Length: 212
Image (cartoon, rainbow, N blue to C red; front, top):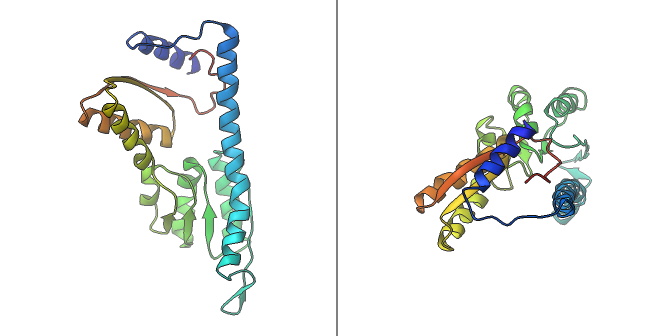
């Protein structure tokens, strides 16, 4: 799939004005930079959630007890987009730890995977980050406090049109959020009179971006 995506990118690039990276070193530097940004973003999200949760509970006076009952926070790390592992962890939290509420879910596949468990157990669940629009349709027990891909992608298409950009190639990760963003951009860009001349979907595990 990686080689197919590369061929599509190269074909699409011929349809548009392009900025060319002439040397192998430049391409490798770009690949390293993109990979580092993705890894750092994922780690930053995980690092910031725990202190933010605890600071918020302190601010509203909910650390310790609520209505005479102890409040206990239990943390689990899924390690990224890992629906199987996430489902196992959530099932343990519901059945073994008997949690009253769940929160988190940085990645869309993880949220989709646990929806049947949430629905069956009737456990209220707060989505902190996962942004695919359809997540909240999977259970009425889901509530999202972040955003959807449409909210951040539609303005990008509007900006492109206003800046006289007429033709675009989209390249997204081939899973829920990427496809959601692609759909949002194409829909709005077409309304603005623009054309998406190629839509590329890259495997989620892609780490070598040098051919791009």
